Image (cartoon, rainbow, N blue to C red):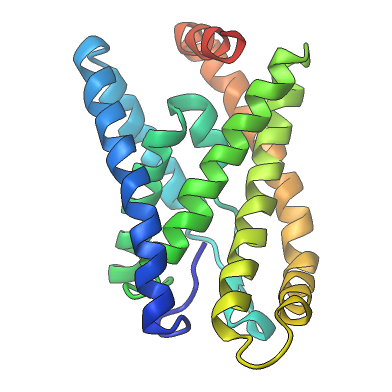
Length: 221
């Protein structure tokens, strides 16, 4: 998610950064801990991070919302490496995009991390676990994880913008207007992310079945 530089007032920009920092620390601890017992895990995290960077580098401008729309990849990342590490790789991707590609901004980095990294990862991982626990197939659970993660990211972005910019007007009216501005692009993009997640899970299963076995074990545990 890329809220443009300068869109959020300083107070809100700082508040979202403070919200993001504990999740970032949690993700770093998880990567360190799993990296000590699984030598290849850090390399896999880096690979997934590269995928998130590429997927989220395809912006579609949404002028009425003051931002852009694009796939995120964090739902897929969360079911492959876990939600905590996904926050880390999403943060790195967003930082690099802000510094070198003019996607998003440094002042809005905290808000972008919360929507794409934190909410996107937790919703995607939660959807996968709940559906697998209910007996759904990997394909169905992966599709839901990708789609719901994408839509949750943009719902959170809409809330961040509405909270910061409604002024003396109606918060709910502005929130509804921003969310409706995203619908024409984000509804199909969410479906695309669901399909992408299914394909990626199948690909990983065919090449590295042990990774998917651990994933399924975590989901049913």
